[in-house]
Structure formats: structure tokens, C-alpha cells
Image 1 (cartoon, rainbow, N blue to C red):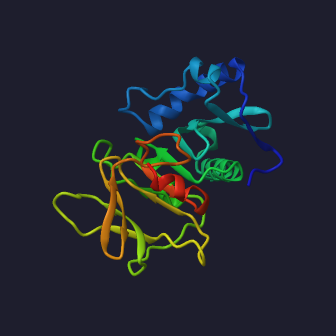
Image 2 (cartoon, rainbow, N blue to C red; image 1 turned 90 degrees about the horizontal axis):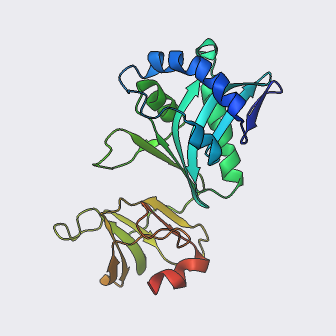
Length: 235
């Protein structure tokens, strides 16, 4: 995705920080005039290793702050030197990052973008809005693997309710039969939604906890493979 004159660098220096700030104020004035620079790139982000830059002819001309665990990566504001605007470089940068993290085993990519330009880029890259009442129209997400499709006929299913107490009909449903279909179950599930297991039309398990490799029980996704299913049902 990145040409010979462009490369990703996950270990930028404070010298890069100084150079980035030489053009970043102009970039924010163009993209985020009312943001108050609350998401500005700061020295501690470089120190904690949550910054990747795009080098063009050796210079850090684009910067992306991110957070990643073993399954999910969240991208915050992407900033690009204004002299490279309208050349498709921001999209190439983001696409290359997505490809990089996908190769690392990441299954979900999220973006948080308060600017209209950032949201347009997320939509262009086929990110979908998250149903998050606390951050409406800010977060987008994209599944990076080929997950299984919904199934409402299987005898044993995992389901999601957006409003379990007021609407007994699940909103989403997947078969838990892994004998024929080996694809994992991966779906967005807001932290206040309930998930459950249904066998022969009877609810046998209901919880608000979500598990992605048991990293975080309040995470906004379910990710179930054949290998982890038995552990999941014991929770």
C-alpha cells in the first residue's frame, strides 16, 4: 500500500515530534477549528509507544495515535501535513495501518474521529457507526476477519438483546455449531446489551459480559471460536 518513498515508522523520535508540530497547527485549523486541540499529539504519546508516523522522503508528514491490545486496535485522529492534502495519502496511510494490524492478528479496527473529514475517510474505508449513546457519531468500527453470518434456525445459538428486559426477542443470532462452519462469531455488542445462549428455543444463559480472549469482560464485542467456546459457556 505504501510506495517506496513512503514507509510506516512505529518508533518516531522527539525530533519527529518537533517537526510534526511545525505543521500540525495548520492542519488542525483546517480540519478541527472547534476542537480546542483536545486530541493533540503530545510528548507522552511518543514515550508510551502509541504513535505511528508516515514518512515521506524521510520526513514524518502524517501521524496517527492508536491503542491496541491483542484483538482490537483503536485509531484516534489522523493528522497529515496540509501540503499533502487531496492526494489520497491519508487513505493510503490508514489502509496500510489496517493491513499491518490485521497481519498481527487484530480482528476489529475502530476509529474515533471528531472531524467531518475524518469521518468521511472512515466511511470510505467501510467503517460502520457504533451504536454508542455516549459517543454518537464519533466511533466507527470494522471487522477485519471473515466472521460467520447470522443464523436463526440452529438448535443451539448465541444471541444478543439490545433491550433484554423490555424486548424478549433477540436482535442478533448465530449458530454455535462448529462441526461444519469453522468461522468464528465476531460482532459488535454495546456494553449495556445482553448476550445469551438458547438451546431448543429455551434460554439457558444470559449475561452482559463479553469476552475477547478474556482480556476485558466489559468490551463492546463478542468473539467466539471453537477453541474458546467451552471456556466461554462456563463464565
